[in-house]
Image (cartoon, rainbow, N blue to C red; front, side, top):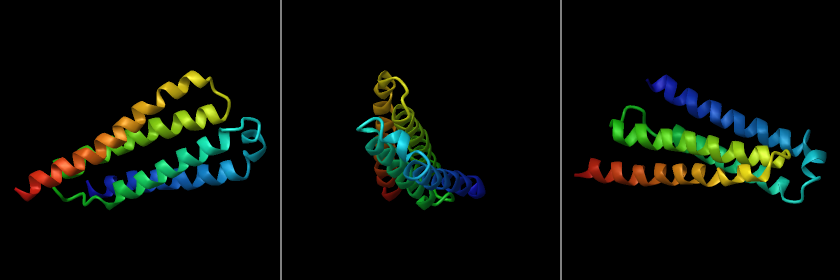
Length: 123
């Protein structure tokens, strides 16, 4: 169980670094074609990396409510949030950006579920 937990965090972190570098170097000319694209790319990378660290910081041996819900909300939220921003940065239809807030909501739910679980653990 613990190995899968850190594998998830590690893959998220590696993807964030790789995509950030790819955007900064290989895609620089393409991202320059859309004025907001570089900012979207950077935001997607930042949120993916931050949530990779958050997933990795959770103790996988803690109670299921403290480990399970925040981890998966952060994982799916950051994947949805970041992938939609990456896609529109590369020229995908802008309506795809309407899905981005769903990822943001899932990330927020991850943080709130962490608060809730920690509150329950204290009791």
